[in-house]
Image (cartoon, rainbow, N blue to C red; front, top):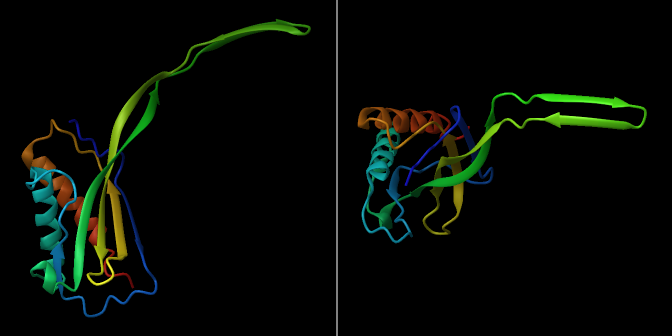
Amino acid sequence: MLLVVAGCTTVTVDHDRGASFDGQNTYAFMAHTDEQSYLSLDAGRIERSLARELDARGMRKVPIDDADILVRYDIVEEIRNQSSGFSYGLGFGRNNLGLGLATAPDSREVKEGKLVVEFVTPQERRAIWRGAGRRNLTESMSTERRENLIDSLITEMLSKYPPG
């Protein structure tokens, strides 16, 4: 599967204004609900990057039953049309009659995805913070470049956590 997280760096965050972010000192990663029973390479990179950023904020990873906050992440895949090139047109008319001819610009479908990270309360299982971001990430990239892209995206996303 070709995974493309495309577009310029676009990071957005949202949070529950009624939620308290005080006292969140521990975290755990929520289990994925898909059929995959192992941690993929990119999922491992995402978890390492999230752990690094959360640890830098004084938080500590603990077993899921002891966590103050649960961390959930996913890559949401979307398809969009991208057009490029020029469109040319030619036409003429007289009185109430006219004739025109135009070319359409080149168009192609692009698989696009965004990395979504949510912080969920363990008791209510309710999201209280959400970050989403896009950046070019393709299957043909080197390991080092993939790691750097994921790291910088998560660093930018979590620079806005906790809200305040």
